[in-house]
Image (tube, rainbow, N blue to C red):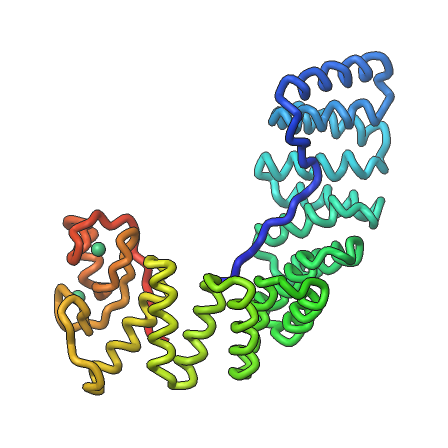
Length: 324
Ligand SMILES: [Zn+2]
Ligand SMILES: [Zn+2]
């Protein structure tokens, strides 16, 4: 899993503003609207206060009033989009952001709103393009370059994603997320030496950065360096006892070593399902994080007691993990 940091959008409210401030401002803008009903800005400003007060229907109406008076009111289009998104109308929201950008291509808030909407809708290619557009408007923001790279990677464009990560790191040498992402891409390219170096940079910046440790463990595993891989997964489990990736990979490695007779079987560290003793373990149990059941037995247990066979704790969810 690669971390996905959220960026701020428009209408971030000043921390010292309170509900009463908004209501007061709303009253003021209401008066302005009454004084001059043809003032698009007054309608727009009134809408922003409704939006902050979470009065979405009223906000929508105000932004529409503003747009009726001035079709090219890009802020009204942008904020109408924000309101529609809040109301769950994603397609319509996207259209409003695009209208705002069409009128004012330099409106960063609308470009960012569009980018976030696209990433929420899992439209990776378009999200990458939108973050690229945003980073051209705000060239000193390495987060935007990272985001572009992140969605290029999601699209399977590893080469382009690597270029973006290089750029993000050049902008901020201490950018841990970009370093570890770079390591993951290098691992995909099987450039293990370079990837491990990149992991070391991350771990120098933050010795408890589990993402880099995971990449390191996976690289050792792919290289057949079983002991190093085990040691790395162990260190992750020490930091995060419920890290399913580390717990499961450690299990598969130890299972193989037991099959080869390299390490003896220990109690509480079963090579196969603890219920049927036959099938391979594939079910990671949440929240206790025991890795002990095959798929079939897990299904039976869920219909029956829904309790973990090891700790007897209630099973909230199961996560299927196969050895790859
Ligand atoms: Zn079983
Ligand atoms: Zn358990």
